[in-house]
Image 1 (tube, one colour):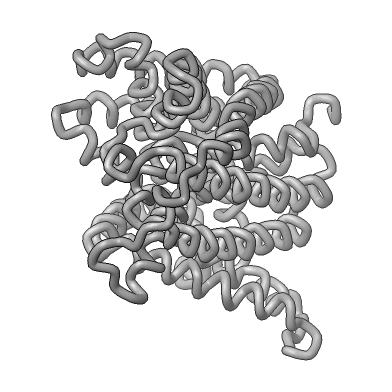
Image 2: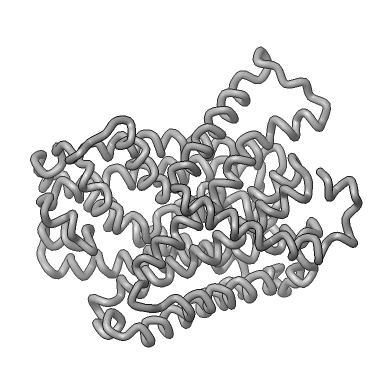
Length: 438
């Protein structure tokens, strides 16, 4: 069956493809107001991302099991904590998918203007896209991963082109500006919060572990390699775009990469980059649809999600998780396509980010807890690297959670609380008192 599993390149593409998605094409506009201070945000978020990537790399070596953040949390803290991490992470995935597919359709509007004028047609196009990629994933993880590899390569080439050749058109006066009303240290937290969204997806290769060839070796390599590739791409491309476009233009740009290409090479490349943005969103959506089924299957396998989610195809694809998640994404698109779409899009992004950061925080210390459970004494002398990585990854995760804002945190907690009746009603009979009180 090894020929049916995905290897290092495809796993790396899953990590890189899930991180390099819709966000990068809009990020220069958000960061332009900070000028060269945006580099501080990139520095902070890159260090945090590498710390978290190291956390997941170490956990995948310790436990090469399917489920990623949920599986690690469940092993460390028990089924109750594991359930809420799985519940929140699962919600994060399918709500994030609704935002990504909206961004995909938005990037098609230069070619099909009707999509920008008719919310109904745009919604129909979004729903069709979700179900086409769901069908692709139902056919098998390997086919979905191959599609992910192709889209990742395709979208990286033009982005890297602007991130390298674009510096020939770089104007220092556009980039080296001092933000108005600059307050320290708020500027560092604000820029870091903006750039952090780009790195979500670090854990992607750990979730379908059972489908990855030689997981003890390939998952850590893919996680670290994918994070480093993404960091280089983010910093170079966003910095180049901010330096290419005049400040008064980029702060109002709806498609900064396309506008930069237009300034560099003309209208033809404007459409090329617009197409690239659409492909980027499509590849990202494919990767996250793959994960939505795996998360639900892993939770059901541990008896914290209903056994219904254990249903798989002959290719071992978790069909129930894929279909239920895509139905929920479809409903979210249907009920939220309105005149206030942009605000709703931002709200979904913030909630998705928060729901992902909570598992990150638990996973930061999971290895320490698991080793302790196995009877290994944790001392500074023998475990300096582990303690250092865990402590700073936890501090970074908590800081990022606070950075999402009190309103988002409140909504996120309410969303997690919705899982309470689902948990106790569905699993109280199958869990012992000791497990429920862990």
